[in-house]
Length: 335
Image (cartoon, rainbow, N blue to C red; front, side, top):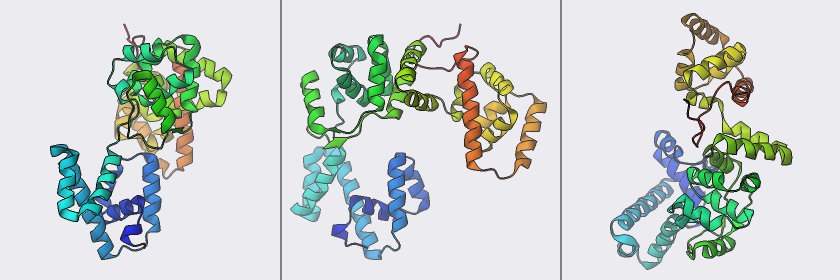
């Protein structure tokens, strides 16, 4: 194991989680992204032994940073630094404050997130599609969806595609865009950030009305079929079945192959199982539960394939107008 002063932040985080134990670490994981969990887990697995003094030093550093964070909340950054200087001296205090202020960086386009969507629309509607995509990728999904719905139809799909395929963008370019749009430069933007991505455009599309979503996906199917299919897959996953009304779930139960449905439910959450079983007759529910019980162990790949088939049926039923999946906008209101 490396010396304390040569440990990376990731290594210290791994040692901290090891020291806290599995129960607390599991609670921490709930607040992390999949990528962060993957990197941390890999780091933890590479640590064979944690010396007691190393463990104590990492825990002490974490405690002092947490304490300084609390001081920032109560009395501001200057007050927090004063406390750290008294406790550790100037050099160590500066190091801790640099780490703290880095974690307090303002996300790009913070001014736009606080503004009314119509105000943001007025600012960006005549900009280049790439600029619009950059701004929307940083806004809250609901806000981005509303803005995307009100942009001209001929550029909606282009912007959605640019969000999904956006690469890392330098802070200098982001700052220039911020200055041009609102004269409000964020001084704490990271050197490189990763806006956009497929999941980002999925969240944005979930906030638009059904007609806008269909228009965008229809165009994307022509321009980039693989991208359109990947977006569709993520627009509705098996666990989202809970957003369907009872009539829709009953229709799905009738249409889906029962073997696929049983496999799909094998690893589903209790909430999903309950809502599906509640929409079956008592006889069918009993038969399903018995067959699932006697099914025995199944391969995860088979379950995933079954869930994919089930979701495919749900998407087909929506496309032909047999069921409705609740989305943003007013066209999903049933009357």
